[in-house]
Length: 354
Image 1 (cartoon, rainbow, N blue to C red):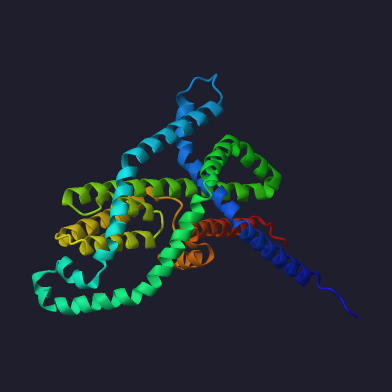
Image 2: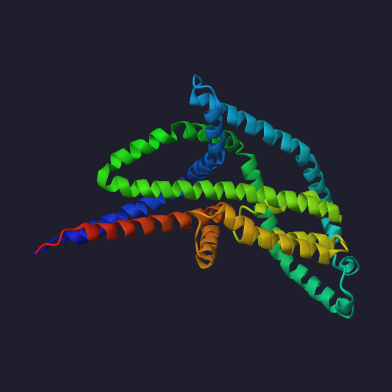
């Protein structure tokens, strides 16, 4: 006689629901990505809203404080873009026009400065560089084409630049009410667990987003000022690239350093040793002083998991997947730790039956 094992049926049903949820998330990933960036933007502006709320007259509603913060941020972004955008654009155009000359293997030998003890090996080094350039051309062109298509795709979706601030405005306005409603719907027993998880995630996202912004601004400022003082070609452009890449954990700073040294050496910059010394010193300060201080709470993931998460994020979502890999891993860790602690607490509280 055929029978149905209810335990196996529940497991199968749970797995089916989990797979279905993952499929739905993957299908609407573009929309979810906009929501995620809106959440990040909300965490970035929330302290400013609270500051305005503290000093504003009581008769003004909270909506006025939020609108004032958004207006000031938009104005500041416009001023900064006007001050630096034109120069960065000019440097980018100039670099793109000079790239064929800079990458010409026949002229690299004269442009790349070498220490005196390496001068006898200049021919061998030139042969190696030429081989690498020739072998990498087939990979570089498709990558440049994909990057160009991605930029064009983003340019055709400028509506996201409007949606993200609008969603952030609504999230800041309604987040306290939404959080209270969700926790109350979970009930008293599970509400304490999910309440603790929510508080941990709040600390995680707040620290992570604000730290990334501060690190990016610090990198852009330090690189641009020092590069300009040292006479590095395309100083503001290279500083801007380094600042943008700072938001990509682990890989971004390495790519920025490689880009700066490569462009500087191919442009014939003569003080690579001083430039390398500054970059090394700054990375020590950034990675071991400033970054740990800013991310002192919440973002605590082992380097091994970070690398695995970066690789998986690149496969699943490209640049966006890499950007979100660390907070996703930290979120999973928070949920795992809180659920495990809750189970231990429940087991200790169970009465012992004689």
